[in-house]
Amino acid sequence: MATERLVDRHRMSDTHIRDLDVYYDKGGMNYFDYSTKPKGIYFSSTVYEQPIGSAWKTLKIGTGSQQPGVGYILVVPLTRYRPKALREVRERVKTHAAEIHALCAVGDTAAMEKLRAILTGSEVAAAPEAATA
Image (cartoon, rainbow, N blue to C red):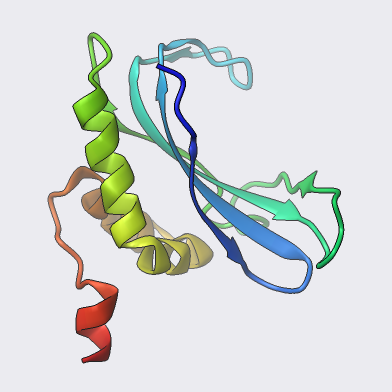
């Protein structure tokens, strides 16, 4: 069941990188706020500081306006693992990676609602090729 979490990586600047991950989590204790994390398929956006040519990556931690669009979202709640659900979410993220990076950069409520709609498949965003045609 071990699969690659990383779906897309985008260099935002000479020193910052954003990773988009999709993964299955069996749930349990969330050690950041001690709440119970439900079982399911999650999407996460993480920002790292890594200068071009450097082998070192430093995780950038912040909340709200300090780091907009950083965190995780429960996309598909599950009672047991379903590989098809994981594949579907991964494909949506691959297909709309550029738009997802842009939404994460904005990070406001409207952008996060649109991001959730793309991840769940309730809103089909324009494919990157269709937007340039």
